[in-house]
Image (cartoon, rainbow, N blue to C red; front, side, top):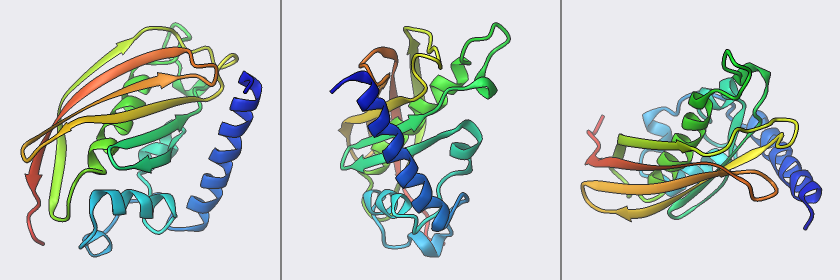
Length: 181
């Protein structure tokens, strides 16, 4: 598949999901009663269906969840003028936030009912500048490496439609029992 057709496919998938999310719960934070009894994967799938709100940060930074499965989360972002640093490049914080979202949500898919997680360590490596004219969309693909009772680790990569690697990251997350509300 050519780079143009990959990009067209990515944009079409993004538009379909955007329409579904905006017709559904929209941006916000889920209430405890909305997520009670759901595994992390069930929560992420409900979010993609528009049944649960998606995090407002996705709207602020122009990225969104595209795919989710056990141990895997894919986010797509549109790097643009609002994400520039003083030198005119895409700010490293945008890369880091996109990667952190893919990493955290990949870990989230592994959480059974009543378990949660938080990022304890995030390591980010920027390997190539994103040129929005050449890569108007990028994807952060997060994959769980290990998920245990107390710790989870994951890795993620930001790639363009042509397969170019822009950044990669790893995380260690603390896993814990959620308090009953």
